[in-house]
Each structure stands twice: as C-alpha cells, then as structure tokens.
Length: 367
Image 1 (cartoon, helix red, strand yellow):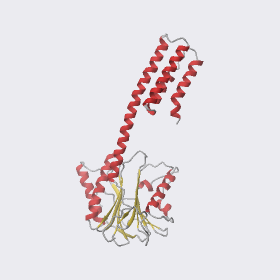
Image 2 (image 1 turned 120 degrees about the horizontal axis):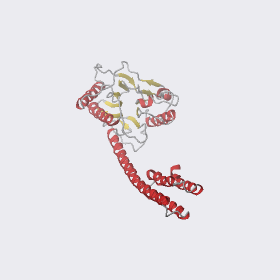
Image 3 (image 1 turned 120 degrees about the vertical axis):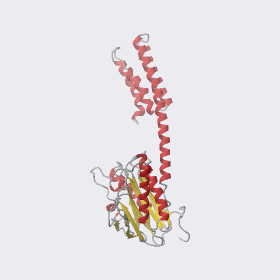
Image 4 (image 1 turned 90 degrees about the vertical axis):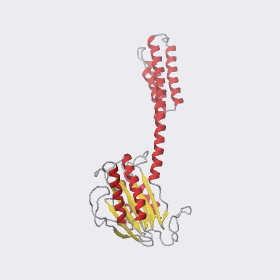
C-alpha cells in the first residue's frame, strides 16, 4: 500500500527540498526516482503520468526561480526526461516478465493436475479425499505424490515423496504414478506392486544414465483394501507411518513389522512384506508425507498428527483433511518449508449415505 503513494511522496519531498535549500542544492534525484519507483509496480499509463508529473514540476520550479535558461537546470530537465523514458522500458520488461511467469504457473499447475488428478470422492465403496499443499503459495510442482485405483483386487493406493526438487522430482513422480496405475491392475499382491515400482525407477535411472541412490530415492506407502473385506494391507518403504482413526476416536499407528528401504535406492532390500490391519466401518486410513510430520513451530517442535487426531471425530475423510491442514498451518504460523500431500480413505459407517449427491460413483458392477 505504501508503494502506491511513494512516487507522489518523492515528488512532494523534492519540491520542499528544492524550495528551502540554496540554489546549488538540487532535488533532481528525488524527481528522477519517482518514475523509477513506479515502473515495476504501476501500469504503463501510471508510469507515464508519474514521469510527466516529475518533469512538469521540475520545469515549473525552474521557471519560477528564473533559472530555466541556465545549463544546470536544463541538465536537470534532461535527466528527469531520460530517466522517465528509461522507466517506461523497465515497466514494459517487468510486465512482460510477469506475463511469462503467470503463463508458466498455469502450465505448471496444469501439468501437476494431469500427473496428480484429484481422486473421486467415492471409490470401490470407500470415501476418499486427497490434498496437495505446496510449501510456497506460488509453486505448483513438487515431489509429493498420491494415487488411488479401484482394481480387481480391491482399492489400492500409494502416497510417496520423491527426494529432491524441481523438474527431476516431477519426472520421478510421473514414473511412480504411471507404474502404480499399471501394476495395481495386474499384480495379485501388494508386494508385487511395490516391486514393479522398484523396477520402474531402475529403468528410469538407466535411461537417465544412472539414478542417484542418495538423491533419487522415493519413500512410499502402498495400501490395499480387498473387495468386501475390512482387511487393510500396508507396505511401507521408508515412509512416515500412516494412521487409522476409528469411529470411537481411538487411533492406530501402522508401524511396519520390518522396516524397509525407500524405493529406488539401488540396493537389494529383499522381498517386500505387507502388514495386515483392519479398517472397520467408520474408520479412516490416513497416509501423508513428511511435510506434515516434520512441520515445526517457532520453537522447533514437530507436528504430531497422531497426537492431534487421537480422540477426535470427523464426518468423513474430507473434513479430516481440512482440519489437519488448518491445524498444521496454525502450528507453523504459515511458515511451511516442505510440500505436503495427504490421502485419507474411509470406510462408511453402516447406512451412511454418500456425502454429496453430485459425487460420481466409481466401482465395479454390483457394489
């Protein structure tokens, strides 16, 4: 808001300074600064008006003191005129850069939505909600990922976090998501899906001339809920432990029986082993990236999603994610340093209707 009035303030201060000081003291730098300040923040028309105003004020002052014909006053006028013209060039460059940046943001957001489309709100008889929150408000691409698929073996899902940033992480996200969607439909076991993701990352590493085992790995949680069962199978590859919040507010932390290395490490971690849990009616499974569990407040205290959720009740997964994102924002004071992906899958209570009648039902015939 202050910047809006700064060019006019510079001109006013210049007038006062030129009036109360001796003739050898010039306020031209203040007059010249006015259009320069306007150039990156104002429109082209406003920048022109600011430059014209600064020039006319200097001209009026020199006419009033009778020094218009002297060399120094003429130089002052030429300086203000030249700087004003330069301000127009700066304004044009800044505006063009802003337009290109806005276009790049739209393209990046569109690409990210194509790679990480929002899942349907009801898949295979389960309620589903997902969130992706960038650490910076103007960033739309990152290395966090999620996907849900209704398969012949039940509802399968993945939540992961690619080590690193930038376009390389986005490429890895695309590889993992693509491999998951194919493997989830074909592999009979969740362990088989995990191995397919491992091989896909190995192929991508070979194609790119070697996948960095330190910077190129992917932490991931894979889960499945077989059709018509309350069994919940989980394979955890070095990822934050997911949670199950039950209808009575009790909470389970799904710690793996045998810790496993992240995907893409390039090391023989042995065969994957899934752990079995239950997802009864009214319970919600929550998987998340470390943007949630490693979010810190001003005192450096980590956010603890298990402690924050235990004992709470929510109408559905969407309401849970809304509460979580609001709560972590409050915890960090809005100073998030890492992207955040959340995926919640809930089994409806018996007789619970779909949350909105506009929801498109995706499932197999007879469900």
